[in-house]
Image (cartoon, rainbow, N blue to C red; front, side, top):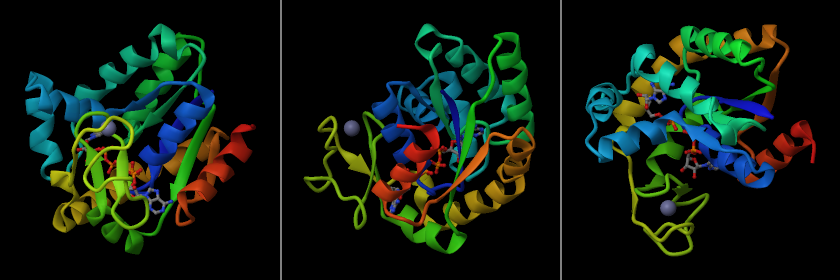
Length: 214
Ligand code: ADP
Ligand code: ADP
Ligand code: ZN
């Protein structure tokens, strides 16, 4: 089960990817989480990525492709994985396809989580992310059991720097320009499926499970 999550920033890709990962027992690979962990640990990659992320821009393809290609080649990915936040450009998708082909593998499902732009800015301003495990919450829609504390691991929840409204608007523009073309790309490969991301979290997940099979 090799799955790609597509959708605007804040559409709920990460939320659904975590649920898929738990239910089907496959790794959740989030490039945003990988970059944030690198920033936290002060690595060279983290330093480079941060300058782009803070502006709402995409990190250059060459900094992300090898990282993901190496990750999906690891043993725990043999049965499948859910990629969240990658690919985000046509060249990234082409590089992934080429690498998978060499491994005798291919993308099984590209799940497009559809949410109109109008809903995104409010969603993002309410997003809270765990500094430790990357779990996300929403102060109104999906609150943690204890305010400011992660249900999964007990660490602190923060508002991401790039979730400020000005940066979110920039990220949405970047999404439409660079990432949305992937919808056509995966439609042509006959692997695109769509779910209505405006429904509540459990309903969206139920729709995904119907597609993937129980
Ligand atoms: P969101 O969950 O809002 O979609 P992510 O956590 O996936 O955001 O990504 C945060 C930021 O990390 C992006 O705005 C971008 O700067 C960078 N990033 C993550 N994945 C990629 C990628 N595949 N290619 C380029 N940049 C990326
Ligand atoms: P993405 O990974 O696509 O950027 P997230 O999964 O982080 O998106 O979700 C963005 C924000 O919206 C988070 O605050 C999350 O808790 C909230 N959220 C996710 N799914 C839903 C939903 N179905 N309805 C309402 N809010 C949601
Ligand atoms: Zn946590």
